[in-house]
Length: 311
Ligand code: RIB
Image (cartoon, rainbow, N blue to C red; front, side):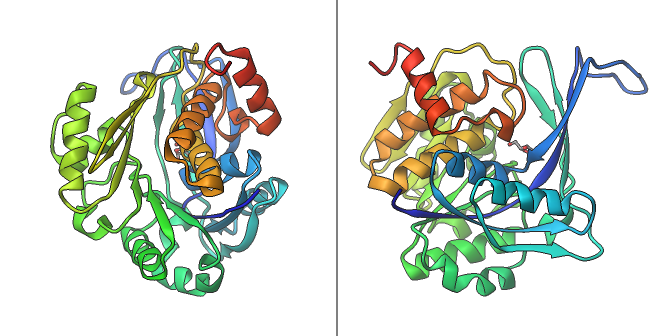
């Protein structure tokens, strides 16, 4: 496959409880099932792209606890370049307790651990390898200064960048992300960034346009069960939702971004990449887990063949 992707971002250990309902304050209730898996928005996006066959490099930090080595091995299992994955002495790995309700919806708590120590100097250390990439992907589970520094780095070296502003961060400065090539928020993140309501696709488009006015060139809004929206200076395109029964929506946004990146770096066909991303994310929510629910290229082809969407 052509095109190389770098993910400058997080990794977490997902501790997933499948609950009947969320406990109230001071209440103890029993949950029917638990699973542990590799997660973190950055790692998820890297693994989704790699499972589909992309050439991926990861820039991240793990703790020197029982989870760190396993996370590195997990990247390597999928052929991800880990030369810039550093184990940090005396620090815990990132951990994410996750609660999935019967509707498939999730609530996530993150403890950043080593991810909080991925600094601009680490990007400088990886610079020569980052310069060989076609797309650099970021999220907000690492320090904001590192995100700003990486966007500037991409801009200076003519490398396209994608920022997934997740989880929503009130102190993210829209002016300092203006040079990003793609901004990919969900509705909550878009509302926070724009300060505008996003109750329906029309409002989401207006909110996305307000970010274009701040200098961002391309906004891709993920709308969950309502599909996605591509907003540029010259056009607005709707990416139709894919009807599936949701079992676990955890990591669906990451699946979308990983699949988008894998397809986009090959031929730079934006709409084709978004169409593939929507289908890949839909497939992921039909299965439990985060990275575990991501299809490889063969499984994804089978999912597409089984829908009426891709004759
Ligand atoms: O987007 C899903 C991810 O968010 C989970 O894997 C969890 O680790 C948190 O980072």
